[in-house]
Amino acid sequence: MYASKRFSYSFPVYKARCQLAAIDYMKHSDHENITNKDGSIRLHRKFSKQTNHWTVCEEKEKKHYTYIPELMINIVNRYLTERIPLRHPVTVKEDDPKNISKTVAPVSPEPSHVLAAKKVSRFSKGT
Image 1 (cartoon, rainbow, N blue to C red):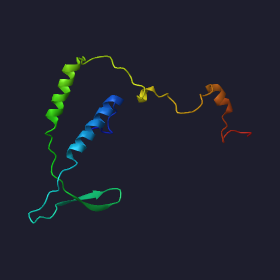
Image 2 (image 1 turned 30 degrees about the horizontal axis):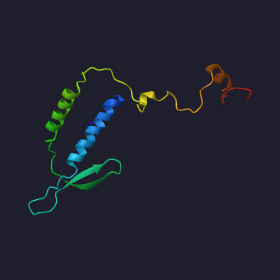
Image 3 (image 1 turned 180 degrees about the horizontal axis):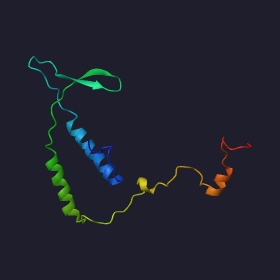
Image 4 (image 1 turned 60 degrees about the vertical axis):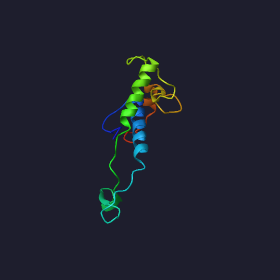
């Protein structure tokens, strides 16, 4: 919901979205089950495409987003007290994935013409 796989995000944006997802999960993790008039727990059905079977889950209360105004107030207060402009230069941290080298190979590659000369194909004649 917060970090859809249909879009690509920079690392800081992805990190913020994951933090929002964690806050949302923690605020709604203790919701009570909904009960029917007779006192039994209300269930709803789900179909799994992977197993091609139906299953049931307990139905929880709907989410209430009462914490969001408080979160927004905290963000604005932090912005006002720290005096950081909205468009300030960003420093890349050492643990940022952008700092990882382009390859994961433990040794540096040889020049392309050397690698091409060493390459042996199963379709080449005479070998």
